Length: 106
Image (cartoon, rainbow, N blue to C red; front, side, top):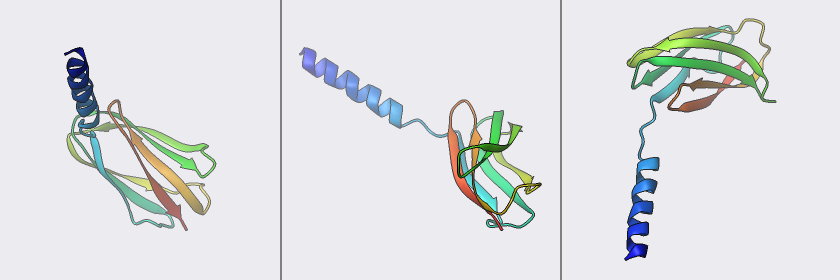
């Protein structure tokens, strides 16, 4: 009986942990690759403060910005600035989730 209860509890805990929805979805940079600027867009399931971070391939943060997201579609322009050509990783992070993708500057 104890084993059954432990199994049911473990199964319930496992399914709750892995069935949580991500609060950030459909992260896209368009155009990608780009020369001077691109538009970052994503969907958010809630209003929250989020952090947009760009890291180089060595993992060093080269750009960071705090965003106030709204429920639904969010987008903002990202300018190359003084970043050199290459591959970067961009991330949107809030309290519930973190989503990262690759960004190429020509």
